[in-house]
Image (cartoon, rainbow, N blue to C red):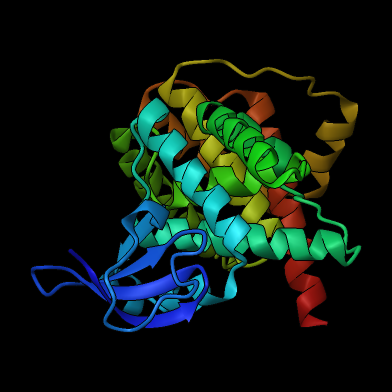
Length: 282
């Protein structure tokens, strides 16, 4: 039997179990007309969190601030991931996702447009994970009656990927090593810091992830290197030399040739990085 130790609102209480462990219990009406010291109405409990897990990360504050329907929808997403895909969300990730969804819905209600500038790059880089995120959006729609925009699938994908919950762990380790090496190349060749904090650097890193995925799966990517791109190469010899440097590194690392077209795409990203840095310095 679990005993209520504190009532936060109608849907969230803290309790202690028979072993003396503190837990946060979430469920419709679990705190309604309840009292401290009373037994928990277990039929109302829909989700529980160990207090140490949510307290240390600040996630407990989020639990109190997120509307209960969003918590319930996130719990359903968590169940979907576990039962269908074998993915178990850590407490902090689940609460973080609930917080993100609550803020997204609030922005929609306030008429603030939602736009994920990296949506299609995310979809290309993590197609399997993106499909899972689309399934999660369907669950959220069913639970809340709110059809969130496709942009949210990209955000949910990145929540899962950044938490290391999906994908091939070996590929993730290779990807991390490769990205760190390429950041060092760009810093050494051009003096440009790539930290993912700006739009240009985030797009560049996403493109690198896409190239590495293509190389590890040995899929060629071809495009048209027309006169326009040849002019870009001629006008930006230092940047193209860096793109070539990155290409050689990837060639040697994966033993799968980086195409001329991919070197040109790298050049385009490096041009954007340079221009962004110059604007910031002005």
